[in-house]
Amino acid sequence: DQELRPYKEKMKPCRNPTQKKNLQKRAMEVLKRKRMLETQRDQLTNQQFNIDQAQFNIESAKATVDSVAALKTANAQLKQTIRNDLRVDDIDDIADDMEEMMLEINEINDVMGRTFSTPEYVDEADLEAELDLLDDEFEEENEAAIPSYLKEDSLPAQPTTAPGGKVPAQRVDEYGLPAN
Image (cartoon, rainbow, N blue to C red; front, side, top):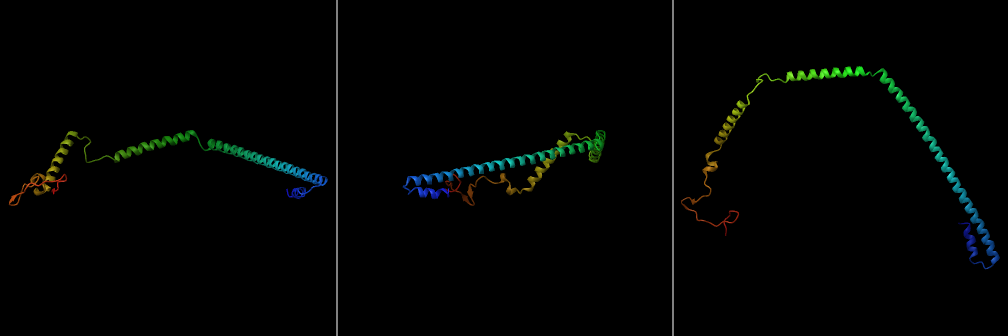
């Protein structure tokens, strides 16, 4: 674009057709060279992209090969460990031993959890009768603990007379307060 600018500026004021054609021809050559360079640049960019793509694919293939090798090694080690160190019969024996020990521990806990002071059998009817007696005693104790002047049934609902005379009837509002 910078190379084309002088040709454009020279062509504008130019009145001579031969000189104008000459300037156009040179401008066309500059444009052709520009397009050729742009094409080469695009081709190089595409080639670089293809090289980068190929390099990425090679790295991915190497990583896949390494992963497969690691899986093979792990598989072989797991098989060897299972064959040499883990036997199903041994594990089954260990599980049976654990089950027997757990049953023994539960039996021991049952024995230790027994109560020695209460009998094995208790009649429910006797327990209910004793509970009713305790409820009655509790109510009597609560009634005796309240002084007689605080009991509700010893106070009148509303005083009807004042000391030494009658209380005149007053009008009250909905809240029970004297109405004016």
